[in-house]
Image 1 (cartoon, helix red, strand yellow):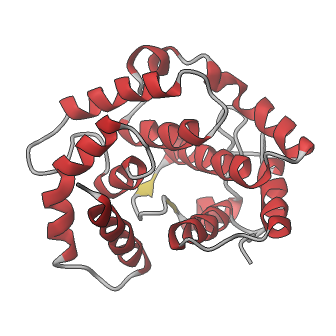
Image 2 (cartoon, one colour):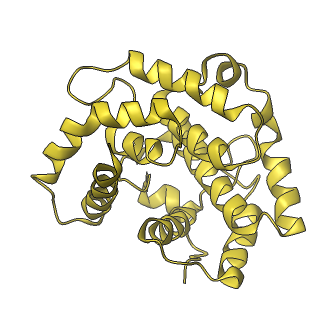
Amino acid sequence: MILDSTSLTKTIDNINTMFLSGQTIAPAEGLEAARWIVCRQGEKGSYRGLPAPTQADFEQGIRVFTGERLLSASARHIMGQEAARAAWLLGRTDPAVRRAYEQATDWMHAVPDFEQRGTYCCGRCSLAFWRHSWVGDFDNKEAHLSKGLQQMKDLRIGDGKWRNFPFFYAVYTLSELDLEPASAELKYARPAMESYLKRPRADVYSKRRVVIITKILENLD
């Protein structure tokens, strides 16, 4: 079961685990999760009307799927983007889900920084914005994302990583963008990914990172 009605974070993690493993989410189960997610819109802790984490999420601490810890406004924004992304993927054919989704994401269609530079707020928030906008119903996203990826390239620090962009969430995001500049950044990150595979840990986040990185390296030219 992918829906955990006590936690938006756990629900999103369950969904992303299914996507990562290539398992099919039953339509009824996906729709149930999507409807619950959009019901979190505008609740306490919501960022600009996006789905809000639950009180339990805030109390336990919020991390993205790859394990990086989130704080304050970035936690609300990133989890909201991840949640809206999941709701779109699982429930976009349902009229009620689609209406709620469109209402929650209307502001995303006119964000000056994203339109002009392809970024939003900080590096980690940009990654969430990219993951969502790439699969969602947004105009000119390839052009905007290409601008953002140029910004990312400019922040390389020479060891396969970047300033301002958390490494594991970054490569996870890049792996889902079917764009040449994203592939170029993954090739740049290859040494850091290969290095990580030599010293994996046993916790749940490390296991996810290993799966993500292994899949990326298998698909790099």
